[in-house]
Image (cartoon, rainbow, N blue to C red; front, side, top):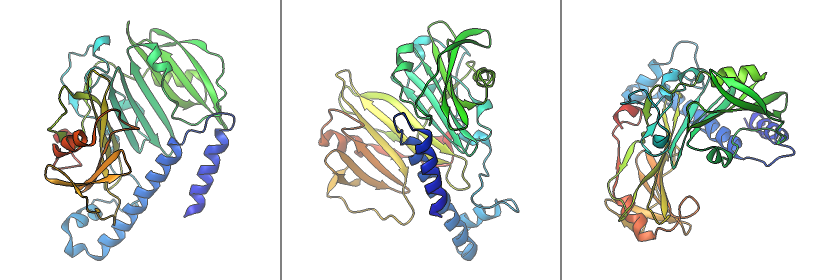
Length: 347
């Protein structure tokens, strides 16, 4: 089973020759493959103990004939965020200001995707889709400077070509591409409204294909960025700055991971992340207390606890800056999980 992964690693590194190596696609592929292997083991186990476990039986019965547990069975809508109340008008000052709201829709882009990662806050809103036929990322920002500061997440050779003028719908913009093996990674940037900037990164054969895909993004509705937990205890003067969530179309786990960033006006911030715990991993006892939970230190700057079925971490540095261990424990003490990880509309 390792030959396929080795080949994908080699291909990714070859495509990145001449540019900075971005480990994100490699890590995402490895994690995605790991989830699928866990699903396969679950399916085999369910076949042998169906009478003993109703929940696993229902998963097996839901699998259409001829479909393996490796295949996605959920519709593309499973990757979408719940709707939010909206007057169908996106205002520049609202974009990235509310970490609970995404002000665009990309339903037309997800038919072949296996997973989607949504993020909003600190002036930027984005979604990145990944699947067997390719990847794409869309970003909406208040300024072009914010787009210029984004890290590239899709693989290419690191040799961007000259920009050319394009039109996305009735709006002017420009596009350029970066070779990626036998295909091209296109970047399309435009202003969907005055005071707003948008960019689509996507693999496409031609510039027209890329701009046509960009034109399918809609700005007449809003969605809620949701994670399957709440933080009932924030530091003094602290507020939510950012939300991110990854959803999957796998046969078993629609939720992959979710994060909330907490911070204050002085520039301090802390990230709380929940992700499904790997199968067979048992929580190691912690010697710290956070509300009803036992917490352990993971290195010097990360606090970790198990809240079934998730592993929950608080990053004070690296992904955070400035909060003390005591403040991190206070935040984790207010962690309240959702009841159903497979129903984002209830989070």
